[in-house]
Image (cartoon, rainbow, N blue to C red):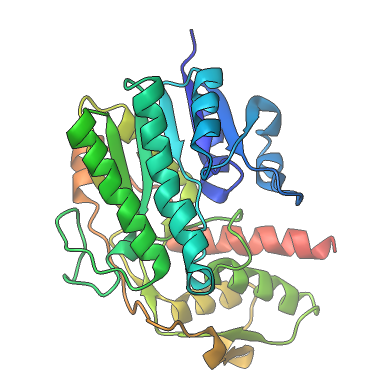
Length: 323
């Protein structure tokens, strides 16, 4: 029989790429979906996996629905990717962020404990937990110091995963993923905000791009590469926590330069700094050390930042040209 997997957050960037990966490996893929009226299926449709997945109504805030989804899917692997994942929004909706990102993960772990403790669990942790960095390069042993309600909520979920692993013997692993982007990224995220604006400016549909901290630096990778690491974690004999990153940090300014340069434009002619986009507590730099993932998982980065930027700009040029 084919393996069965349940993905929360299947309509998000990572969920869509993970669904595609698992379908390619012969899995039966189920996705937990909270139906709230808007078209959340466009990513699955865009990469041609919508017809291959089975959607189950449910919500991370409703443990009963997760229990029912586990029973219905008979999943042997549960990937918890569902979240309120936009950091800026976590300051205006801290309680919602805490509930979805923190309690949502706890609900998944408890559902596994009740339904089938043999189900392997993946928790989507985040580099935002490092926040005010305590080491130049962050790895699995670097102390956490979150600087946003999002980072705090994710840290609760991360330690809950460790606790259920140690207390109940679950095969529960966390991927501490640094920023990962793609053409499926939401428009609210700075990378996609940039590439969408580049397309609109190039096609004469926008004149300027307003951004916040241009000197903030992130370790940016490709989401399609990172979901492979998620799968690899659940194939290991023993569970664990892994930093997934490129090991290279790049500024928002440099990302802008690469994106505008691809269409023959100079970013300095179009980008304006707007203080409204500064965060109440800024994370100035993140730089991951993925040595453990390379050694233990055999995971390798396949996509360069330059290639990623070009792919995102080209996808947005295609989208904007059809508007």
